[in-house]
Length: 176
Image 1 (cartoon, rainbow, N blue to C red):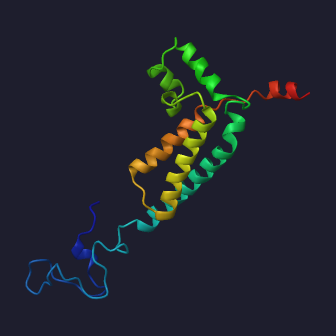
Image 2 (spheres, rainbow, N blue to C red; image 1 turned 120 degrees about the horizontal axis):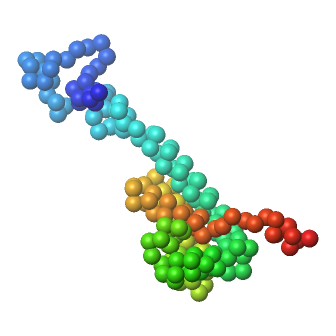
Image 3 (cartoon, one colour; image 1 turned 90 degrees about the vertical axis):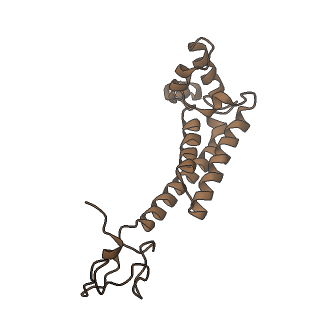
């Protein structure tokens, strides 16, 4: 179904207008007083409120996720964490014969492949803080486009894919 034209949006309820170009038709450039123009955010067919609520909600969820990652990454997947991501990435690299190619990237897609591994804690913190900054920008300003949302997804994907499944039985055995 096609979207209604600007003529249909500008009609007053209960009053018919002549089609554009017909005798007695009002000029299209001057909308009737009291009604918004076709570009108005309140015009039918616009989803400005839904867009604002949805994008800011997603930005809020990302900001919480990156804040939690900033607080917990060093203890979980940092250099001296429970399951260090540096060892995990080295094992993946060794499995794929020492190369970081498409196979390794598809197995563990993360930006950490291309970053410095010598200070993994600071690398993880930088990824989390960058994601938190972008999410806070979207949350506070409401300005979001595909590039910003893709960047948030890529930063979060980079942190999530270097975490591993926790071997709970081994940890329980160590604690006993």
